[in-house]
Image 1 (cartoon, rainbow, N blue to C red):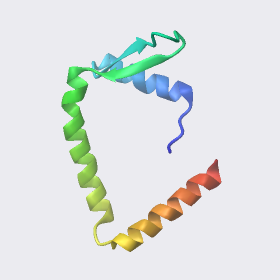
Image 2 (cartoon, rainbow, N blue to C red):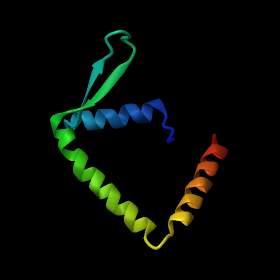
Image 3 (cartoon, rainbow, N blue to C red):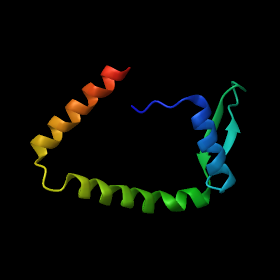
Image 4 (cartoon, helix red, strand yellow):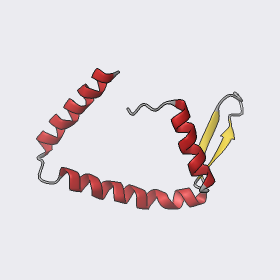
Length: 84
């Protein structure tokens, strides 16, 4: 799990909001909670962004056997846990 500070997330959401890709809506039960949703324009980018991410991941992992990928994943999870 990636951990971000609240101001970092707020700034990222604000930037996406200014580009018209997301919008915020207050929670009906708890006004302190602000929910973030994709706009139609943001939803249109969902497929292309996923595809680009998939291609980059395939490029990054090319030539690495599935067993080695599992080992890398396990080691990286352990390193993450060590940080927090």
